[in-house]
Image 1 (tube, protein in one colour):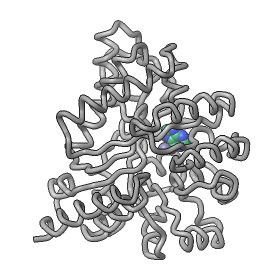
Image 2 (image 1 turned 120 degrees about the horizontal axis):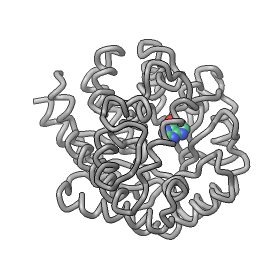
Image 3 (image 1 turned 90 degrees about the vertical axis):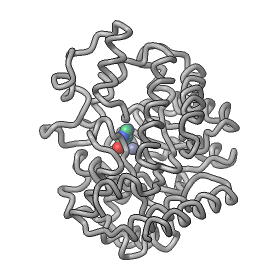
Image 4 (image 1 turned 90 degrees about the horizontal axis):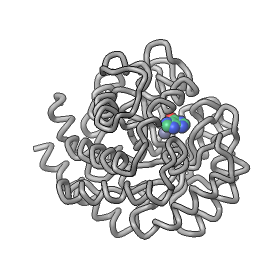
Length: 344
Ligand code: HPA
Ligand code: ZN
């Protein structure tokens, strides 16, 4: 299983942030074309402002990169282009289905683009990409940002509701898990769930089991973003296994934020072996300096996952997708068909 085979393997990804998918090269190009000032004028000197370095160790260091990235959100066209490029990259890695998440408040507040125009620009980028890369299906998850509070959370939920029939399928809670618990957002998640959205929350990344338990018990999370730190609580770990709550695991991001010390010590292997529903994603490929194929390479080389294991995790991701049953079944069938060819 060489890198080329890994790149061509049909994939499903459930956890990728649009804002965190910006490559430093794209940021520079867009900034130069639009006369937007950035703290550096070539890729190498811009890199430490927008990508994790060896000095960064925590979730808050990681999230700090978004203040410079936010400078380029000066017009809806930037967002349209970003969305197109992210889907283009996904198609080149043979991703058959991807859920892209974004925070409409952040994208709007950075440079003042009205929130509905943020959503419209994302959909235009998606439509342009669909013409070029019809094999890659795309859905969107709207993020409520912990540190922006529930008033902004309400605004994000309104965007999710307004565009629900255009491929907005889920609602997430992201941001500063250290200082902001999920409980105040419970009412917003309950409304999102009643409206038919899939619910996923970032939890168990910068905090331990109490944060994951609250995500499940007070916000009714159907999936958990990361969840790495459930290792600290065997009873919670058992609950996640028993209820089949899928984890959206992003190994490199987990190391960069300090949720796991090394690749070798990452609990993904033990989760997988104990029957927890494990799925693999990139989180913020631009900020992390990776792509999904890189993550598969790490799983193969450092954690001894085989092609069969990776395929099984993709089928688990398809099963956990925020799609109606018939579309989920069709996705799983198309993957299985290609996996049979792939193994011949
Ligand atoms: N955790 C919380 N918020 C985020 C992340 C993350 O990994 N990436 C982008 N926003
Ligand atoms: Zn994330």
